[in-house]
Amino acid sequence: MLVKFIKEIEEIPTPDFQVQQIINIASNPDSSIKDLEKAISMDASLSLKVLKLVNSAYYGLPRKITKISEAVMILGFKTVRNLALSIFTYSSLNKGASNVDKKKLWQHFMSTAIISEVVSKIIGYPEQEEAFMAGLLHDIGKIVLDIAFPKYITSLVEKSKSNKVCFYTLEKKLGEETHGELGAFLIEQWKLPELFQIVSLYHDEPENNDQEAFDTILYIVHLANYFSDLMYNGYSGSYCEPTLSAKTFKVLGIKPSDLIDISIKIRNALAKAKALLEGGEENES
Image 1 (cartoon, helix red, strand yellow):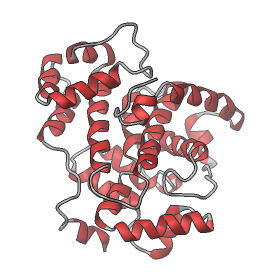
Image 2 (cartoon, one colour):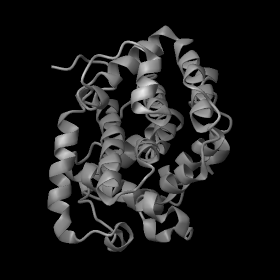
Image 3 (cartoon, rainbow, N blue to C red):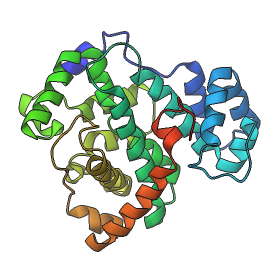
Image 4 (cartoon, one colour):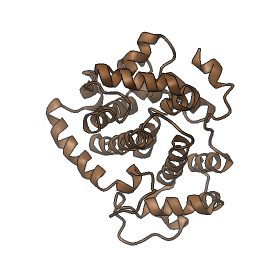
C-alpha cells in the first residue's frame, strides 16, 4: 500500500511551524490582525511574496499595499492565509528533480483555485476563501506521488497522454491508492479541516461522496477542475476529455446554458492572475 511507504519518507512536504501558525491564527476567530502580521513577518521572504501577490492585478486594489497589516485589513484573514499556503505549496512542488512538468501542474492547482473562487461568487457560496483553498489542494496528492513514486507518476502521465485515458481511471485500474486518497492523507497530516480531505478524495467522482454537508464545496471544485482541464488540457497530468457529473447542475443551482457565461468570467479572472499562476516568481507585465 502506498500510504504505508509514504509514512517512512522524510521528504513528504509538511507545513513548517510558521505556515502552520498562519493557518491556525487565520482559523481562530479570536485572533487579531497583529497576530497574523507577526506570524507572516517572521520570514522576510514570505512577507515579500505575500505582498507581491496582494498587489497583483488579480486583486485589483486601488493602491499599492506595503504592509501585511494593510493586506489583512483589506483582503481578510483567510485570503492572506491562502496566499501563504499557496507560496508553501509552490515551494513544495518545486523541490528536487522530476519528470513531471511542475510549471504546468502548478498552473492546474492555481487555476482550479481561482476558478473555484469565481464559481463560488457566481452561485453565492459564502465561504469563497475556503473554495479557493480547496481548489488549490485538490490534486496535492500528485506532489506526494512525484516525491515518493516518481517512476509511477511518470508512467501514469505517459499512458494518459498516449492513450487519452484519464489519470484517475488509470490509477483505479492499477488498484493502488489514488492521488485523491494520498492527498486526503497528507491534508489530514497537516491538520486541515475535513472538507479539504473530502474534496481531495472525491473531486473526480463527486457522486461517490456520502456526506451531503460537503456537496456544495465538492461540486464547486469538481466544476473548477473540469474547466481547468478544458482550458489547460494535460497540465494536471491527465490528457483525457474532461467530463462533468450531471449532479453538478442540481447541487450548484445552475443550468448547462450557464456554462458559457461562467467560462467568460473565468477567463477574465485568469487573465488578471498571472502572478498567482506563476507562483509569484515572475513580474507581471
